[in-house]
Length: 283
Image (cartoon, rainbow, N blue to C red; front, side, top):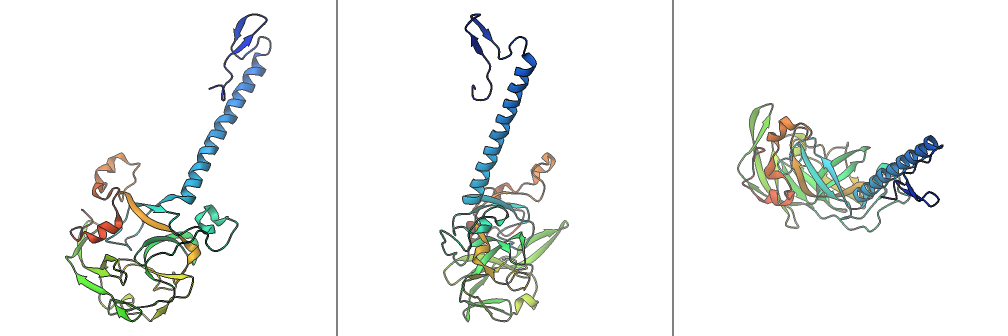
């Protein structure tokens, strides 16, 4: 504790203990001690914030899912943990994009089917979470609701309907298991037949870019739309690893704790996608 407060001093002349405040100069000495203590406390807080900043920049960060574009894999209110080191780092891995380098360092290629958080190309203040569908050089197209990768239709299996609740009303949505060329199997929803998103032109993914889609295919603004388009590699922030906790209500509200989806806490979103019994937001 001597680092923060000089509590006792030995007065060799008087052979007595001095509590840090000498007679005749008590106000001056006491004020200096308080000032030093305040400075020390500020340093401790600053160091703690710096450590947290480094951890969130280099290792893991957390994000909130505000929309249903990744249903049924991710639900509104999911708090997700993202590994920042999986694909290496770009300037956008750090606060305000201020890192003094371009491109990616310690880079590793994302895999098709990964759930990834990235910066929106048209507005880098906004983060998106989607599933990686197209790699550099791929040709991506949707025809009659079926995904084609390099002119090959992906395997699609019809499953039990997904039950979604909106404004206390329950809706049943067609649910499928989609298998990507590398064997990744995940769930997708098809809310409408014949929508614009069900029939697209061919998207040729340029080098250094990626093509993303939401699992909720008719309710996702993703690379099929020019607002998102192809995502440059340097805008990728990290890979979703876990759902930390799930609730549409604020976790600061103790009266809403009973609405927390405890079964989703600390769950693996990739494992959830393989568990076809999980087909309702209430599970």
